[in-house]
Length: 90
Image (cartoon, rainbow, N blue to C red; front, top):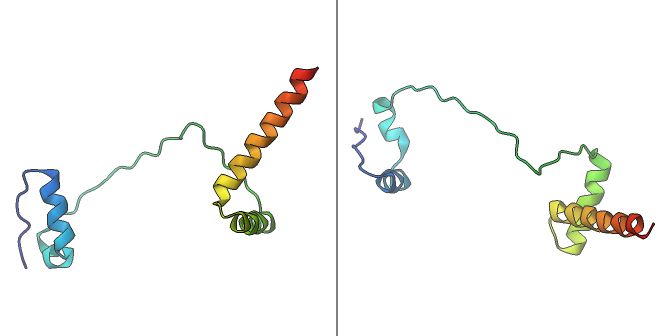
């Protein structure tokens, strides 16, 4: 088995693994633990839609030539603008 070379920069690492198969260096690799921490992103909202509603959203988005996410964002923006106009008139 081949030995993994020492790298001086991150670019060297990227170039090496872009052009080499990691299987050739398997025995030279060390086991390591990685801890992943997920941070909650601000401005992200998860809305369970259900299969039927999601299918409808995807169909409409496809017809309009946009992503489902963009379609829903636009609908929410329109609803907010409409609501703000109504409440500011009073």
